[in-house]
Every structure is written in C-alpha cells, then in structure tokens.
Image 1 (cartoon, chains in turn red, purple):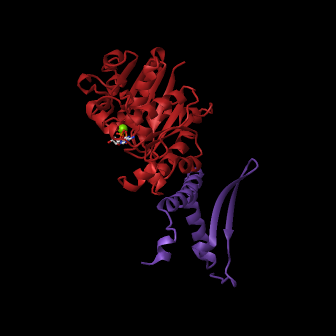
Image 2 (tube, rainbow over the protein chains, first blue to last red; image 1 turned 90 degrees about the vertical axis):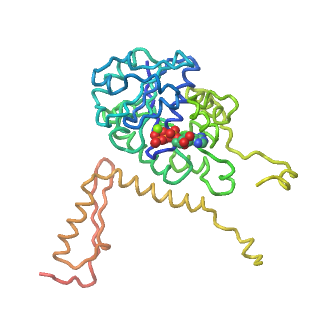
Image 3 (cartoon, rainbow over the protein chains, first blue to last red; image 1 turned 30 degrees about the vertical axis):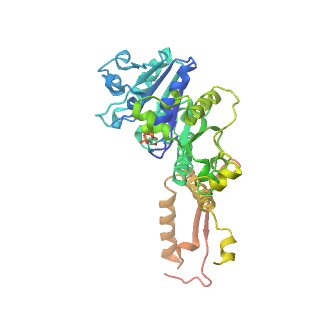
Length: 270
Length: 87
Ligand SMILES: Nc1ncnc2c1ncn2[C@@H]1O[C@H](COP(=O)(O)OP(=O)(O)OP(=O)(O)O)[C@@H](O)[C@H]1O
Ligand SMILES: [Mg+2]
C-alpha cells in the first residue's frame, strides 16, 4: 500500500525542499518506487534541487486541470529509475490546487508508487493545507531556534485536527521530528537549543538531526540532492534518517562537537 | 578587572529561549483548542456586566474546560468591595 509523506514546517526556509529532495532520493536508492511532488505552486524549487529544471514541460496544476496526463508531467530522475518528480507550476497561484484535484492525482500515483513525498510550501495557508491533507505520515522539519519550533507546534496542531485522517476519525497522521541546520558547537556554547530541548518542548519522536553544513549549498548549486554526497555529514545524517523511517534502529550522530586534543585546544583556532 | 563579575556565570541565551518558548507554546496550545468565538464572547459578556457593575477587565475571566465528558464554560467575575449600582 502506497504511503503519503508530507514534509512540512510552518516556518519558511528551514530545509523542507532540501529534505524532500534527499529523502525521496534516499527512499529510491533503497529500492522503493518513489515520487516527490512540489506543492509550492508559484515558487517552485524542487526541480532545481533535483537538477531537472530544464526537463519540466507540464506540471502538477496541468494534471489537475486535465491539460496533461500524469505520465506527461512526471519527470524521471537521471540518477535513479525508481524516482520521479512532479513539478509545481511556476505561474499559477496556490488556489489552483483543489482537494478533489489533488486527491485524484494522489490516487493515480498510489497505483504505481510505494512512497509519495509531498514538499509543502511554508505557512499554514491553503498550499500547506493541501500538501498535508492526505498524508499518512508527516516529517516536521524544524531548526533549533524559537520561531521555528513554535511554528512546528502550530503545524502539529493542524496535522492532528485538519487532515483527512483527523477529520474522518481514522488513525492519526504519524508525526516525526527532523531537526536540521544543527550546530553542535553553538549548542555547546549555550547559543542554540539542543536536540533534547526541542524534543522536550514538542514531545515528538525524533527522526534525525541534520548538521548545518556547507555541502547543502554546494549540492543545491549543482542540482544534486545532498544525500548523494557520500563524504558529507549531512548526507550521512539524511541516510540515517531514511533508515530510521524504514524502521531501522540507528543511533543519532553528529550532535556532539568534535573533541580536540589538549594541545589542539591551546593552539587551535576558535 | 572585576574577578567576581568574570566568574559569575552569565545566563545563557538558550536558557532564556527555552523558558520563553515553553510559555509561548503552552499559550498557543490553549488558544488553538478554543472555539474561535470565545474572545468575542468574553468581550461582549464583559460589556454587559459593565453596564450594571463597575468592574475592570482584569476582574473578569472566561475559560472553557472539559470535565469528564462535559464541556464547562467557567466565568469568573470579581466584584468590587462595594458594588456600585449603576442603574
Ligand atoms: N543542513 C543544512 N545546512 C546548511 N544549510 C542548509 C541546510 N538545510 C537547508 N539549508 C539552506 O537553507 C536554505 C533553505 O532551504 P530550503 O529551500 O530547503 O528550505 P524550505 O523550507 O524548503 O524553504 P521554503 O519555506 O522557502 O520552501 C537553503 O539556502 C539551503 O541551502
Ligand atoms: Mg521549499
């Protein structure tokens, strides 16, 4: 049975699209047929992070409006034949997404995919609502910073009251916390909320911690999801998160500062 | 150099953040669960009471609670020492 996963946050710019690209790629690399949908109509970015922007002909809204069929709009990833991308429209506004239209597309995708990853726009308006409405599981992306954590809590409230599962009294949406842009150095200095602080406040099961890393920007410059960069801590952390999502018990890493030797401390850089 | 000042541990900004966040989220959660008419109801009820008794808005509170399976609307009015008859 296909599973619908929404990547959401409330606050903008916390790493939803970065996570959607890497998570979907990770699932595909594990052998699952995966499609990742850009719900950010009007501000599409997922195609850029996936490096397929020049192959976009039709988009999600074209399919909803029956101007194209699903096969015409789906883009096959160049790196994995298990992975497809359904881009957002850059020109329409978010109201082009209707509950019925989205449901019809998702139902069709369910027939041929194992996982449907929905990259939500920021905010708690119509677009974000459409991205979460049909979700079976939700990955709430948060940065260790007060406004982001507060917005995550708002989103959790919506997931438990406004989604199809909530409205129809089905089993609730399964919620996971993914903490991104984490800097162990700043946590140690008492400048940044720690994993445990955020976990306590949101009381949510932790799917992973992604370190703040320059590799993320490099990856997006190149249009290659960061999870493909085997030398990067961020990639390894995304990989662990995918494993945990699939049920493996993997310990959290990259949350401690690298220990420096005594001499290193004496003479080391700040 | 003030050695005492140097050693007195400065309150870390993250502790301030944690405290503010806990309070904020507790308040958000209460407001989220409330029906949207509650603030309006509170305002209008206060106005009605103020027509008859001289009270301040801080002496009036309204809360929605669940007890067992019942929703209870709790209204608290603190009357002044000598309630002046406005009529
Ligand atoms: N782990 C990380 N380390 C460093 N930079 C990161 C990390 N994750 C994301 N970023 C950077 O943060 C910025 C926002 O990322 P992204 O576009 O994925 O966020 P978003 O939540 O999808 O934003 P929006 O709300 O606008 O859709 C980008 O510049 C990205 O490179
Ligand atoms: Mg985005």
